[in-house]
Length: 241
Length: 241
Image (cartoon, rainbow over all chains, first blue to last red; front, side, top):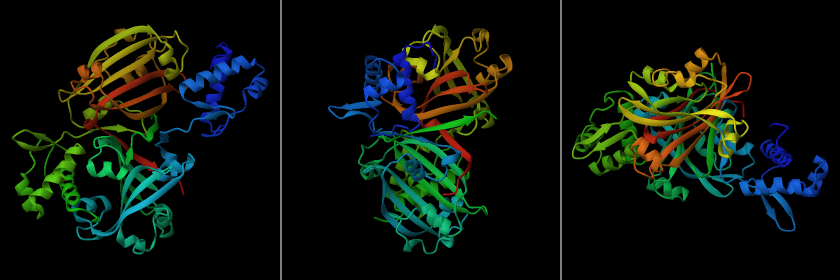
């Protein structure tokens, strides 16, 4: 930001920065116009102009008689990167989203060729499967199919993965995934996925596939995750090396 | 609901055949009847399995001829800024770039925020089409400040990688980039450029590349054919939960 910019733009950017840094949290009121005018030593009209711009841009909204609030974002910005490797739920947790999971199905299946090749299992080895519908702020945002080698997780069925995090469970068995290989494509929802998530057929979805390996290099999970594009925006930071 | 419905198993097993190359890219898939025999399921099950593969872009159908293995997706690296040209040639594919336009213009209100430079900064606006094996895969719109690469108009933007021009000819140390991945619908301009119907979903990647000293070097918006790209992140180390 250039110091020669109009004052109201600088104030506007200062507020945006506080929203981005989570000094002002979504749903929270920002200080009153009077207070802001005092702390920035400017006229109240200047503050009003900055806030008007932010209301127009959708960062803030006003509630008559109550004040100005930070917009709750409908689309979570989710940073896909090294610090956030341990699953989508961790990403949402960090952003203060209220989360809930519903187990659709769970149980044992055989690996066959495909899951066998992903999980390093022989064709007829057992695989434990959990399909979950995932909610953020009471709305479904995704469907997740998690496949685990049964030999590492023989008591998986005794746990309720609506309340227990799969990663915490894996950690308790000494098979916490520490290395991941992830792939992301965009697909259109088929009828089944659309119905599960309450969207239209052919609505776009982020489709993640990931493999997690534990400290000994065992593949401990293969997960397919479908996430509504209207609920999240994935971002990433790449380095030139 | 069944754990893994037969159609999903069929779909997975065909993915396995494609990934482990008994069937190569561009080759015809065995007929529904042959697949039903091979996998020991009903033809109707094979049909729904194939529908999922179509949806995920693994196969494409040709009228009256059957299903073919779709071209392999171009990998986009999430942890490293790498030139797509390099990736394509590593895949053993032919590619060429067509420069649609390069113009010198001042940036306005809609872009200054994105490239993080003041309104009125002179920039090169570059539109390029990327072809892989003679098919259009993406349209790339880049914005480069003129003072970063003053003689960019004289450079060969069709045969040289963009980043190597910046690095070799202008000695810029590229550092990091923040990109976001969203889905948009094709408007008339995009449809005409990419030869897709209006309203077709496209993957849009947008973001800013910075130099080591934190200067904005390139802001780009790339529109990609949905089935031609995959984002890959296989260098992830998770943090302890």
